[in-house]
Image 1 (spheres, one colour):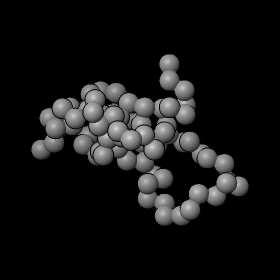
Image 2 (cartoon, one colour; image 1 turned 180 degrees about the vertical axis):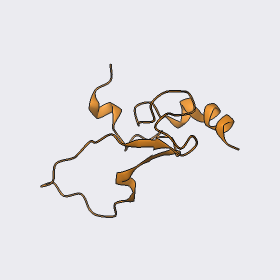
Image 3 (tube, helix red, strand yellow; image 1 turned 135 degrees about the horizontal axis):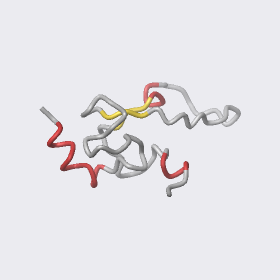
Length: 77
C-alpha cells in the first residue's frame, strides 16, 4: 500500500499531463503557516471523472505518464 505522501505527490516528475486538481488553479505562494489540506480531489482530463482511462483512481500515485500513455491515447477522441 502506498503512503499518502506518495499517493498525493503532485510534484512527481512523470505525472500524467491529463491529471487535474483544484490546487493547480490557485495562484498563490505556499504559506508554511497554513497546513496542507491533502484533500485528494483529482480528476482525469481524458475521462472527465475521478477514474482514469485504465479504471483506476485519478490521483498522482496512479497517474504516471509512462504507465498511462497508451491508455490515454485510446481515450482521446
